[in-house]
Image (cartoon, rainbow, N blue to C red; front, side, top):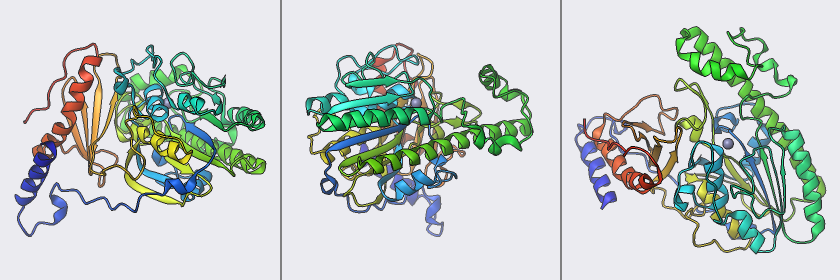
Length: 445
Ligand SMILES: [Zn+2]
């Protein structure tokens, strides 16, 4: 049995250390101290607001390491906030499929290509189940990938697609849709999807103070063509220029996150003024993160490193006790958490688990297909993360002491083997879904 072997491996390696070595040098993870599971039934509400923020890294929030997000920080402190939440993929379509479907594309038999040419077919998602339950619905999205054709908004009554429009426009449209939903008389669900923290990070001029004092870059970031050119040229720059590039990207990104936060604060006030929160569950989450050159690259969908995969998620409802949940969760867990709060059953095809109901030692998986042929897969287990590339190679990190994944520990073979034991069945499950060469197994050095 996999788990039995894992425990033996970890214990054996721990026992190999001399008795007077500190426990920290053994590969055993500290146990995750979980509070009692949240009482979701105490927070029963009629309506639902979903706010998804594209490309917002977890550490952009002041709650974690960022600054300039006072609204989201405050909302998190008043919510069931998932402090170890991860996206199951590193770009919008698969991530939003997991979040809105309670299961991921690979549960439906495919790994999305980088262009999202294949949609969900007739597979149901949250909009389907709420439509069946008699909800009236509206979605306002700045991303083209949340649409009827691919399936994420197929049953939504009113779909407004506002490509790359800023949060103030999207949320103003959302408020207009909200008024119409509430006038309908049925239970309602409103979904707003924001893309301000997606490149090219263009917050309003009032945020330019964040980068105005930096030395100028060798390229003009106000010119969209320069972004891809920079990705190619980055490796040829000296360290000082690389640092400057990182600073410019981080400053613009921070400005975009702050702008999003301010607009969400304004939106929340408008919801309160309308009395729209009195009988409503609100979930705020990011679909995935963004790499800001930590591993020599910029963007998302290119790796499964922390920056791209760590996401935010918080659930607020009038009767829900604030709680910081430290256990591992992912996007599939949102639907089975939300549906009981609305008094609705969780459909049997959902593979996620309600927050508080999962074994904290269960492995958490992710997959992304950056280039059509060579998938990347990840497993988190206890304090470890393995990042695995089908063309060969695995990296192993300790999420508790090295969350930015700077120190690859794959040389610690017992741990690497244990993680591969967990990941390999998932690799074999996905293998027939990808039209490419066979995955190269992780073998002992
Ligand atoms: Zn996205």
